[in-house]
Image (cartoon, rainbow, N blue to C red; front, top):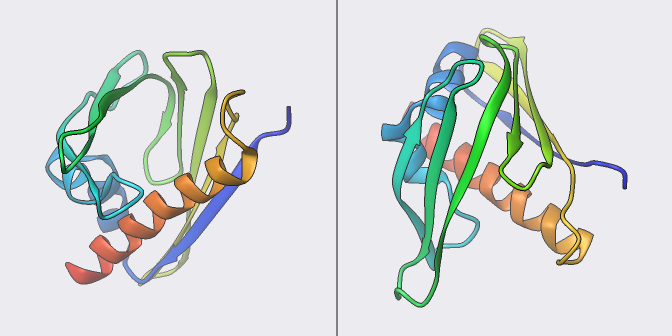
Length: 138
């Protein structure tokens, strides 16, 4: 199955985008697809072979799960690659447009349960949350 791609252009320097995207203290503020959810806990060991654990939870406590993966490639300010615990590959590319503009592309292998459009919308929504959080903290 072909990978899905989502992207966003962030009005912020690439160094700040990288920090806000990779540091646990920021991840908890943007890593959810809808306002009815949140990310109450994040652990991130950003190194090849390192793992991340993000708790994704409904605010009404009706559902939660841990999104977990292992890093396979890290090129600071350029690329992050990891495998989700179910074996799917994710690649994230950071592209500096100019000193104050950064573009992020995420390419991910879809899972087999939910519709492709739903998966793409969910991942895009999380990236949009990131953009909003970033630009609200300039």
